[in-house]
Image (cartoon, rainbow, N blue to C red; front, side):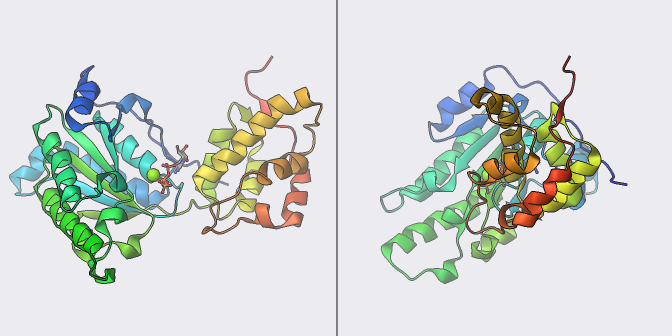
Length: 315
Ligand SMILES: Nc1ncnc2c1ncn2[C@@H]1O[C@H](COP(=O)(O)OP(=O)(O)OP(=O)(O)O)[C@@H](O)[C@H]1O
Ligand SMILES: [Mg+2]
């Protein structure tokens, strides 16, 4: 019997001032994407990551008690793992649970063409946040663009620029006290050891297991539904798929159920509908190809699903 993945709904712990996002935008400039708590989605994560997140939230709420014993809640984390597994979604969810805006910056946008420019951009970002009147979750994506290992560099001018940018980043991460800092990377092996060590936590967001795939498929198939045994069968056939790919797959089914009849195409064959979707929806090249994409017998075996899915609440 499959255990439902226990997910806490995203909720705000305090109301964000109406124009806080606007004010942040004007302080930080155009390269930042500011995401409000209300737009956050709930990631479906493995037990270990959920526990780590729950512990982090609990210690933030117990800040006063921690201070009495001489420690503070942890203020930063490095998220690493394959693309489409929920690093950005998790950071936004974390910000939303704290009622804070998330400032999203791609590291590559901080790298400038002139010597010293990258370090200045990084300093401007952190200094801007330090004087902002709201705490934030600062989310730095693809942090390896600045934080790649110095050992792998060859010593050109471009490397000097990257080294000086990294030095500024290391200092600013240590000084940061404008909220929480979360960085993400798909390339943990490339991250500089000194930067790695600056993070209080290094959290691996791996490909989903069978229970998580089941919950993800169910969520993104809604408002259509399939019996649990059928979702189990699909979860098995999609071993190795990221949540983002599972979402594409289920949204493809929903799209097909609505659009195919207009094109006079049948919707009563699951293998046919899945074949149409996977022919145009591939996992990224560096990722494992799930059975459903690579084996004709797996596709064919979907003929035993109760098909088509039923729309909940339909007359
Ligand atoms: N764990 C998850 N649970 C539910 N949905 C997810 C999950 N992970 C990803 N998704 C879906 O896939 C989309 C892309 O995920 P997200 O951007 O968070 O991945 P990522 O790990 O940050 O990827 P990248 O490394 O490419 O930046 C999300 O908007 C969400 O719809
Ligand atoms: Mg991301």
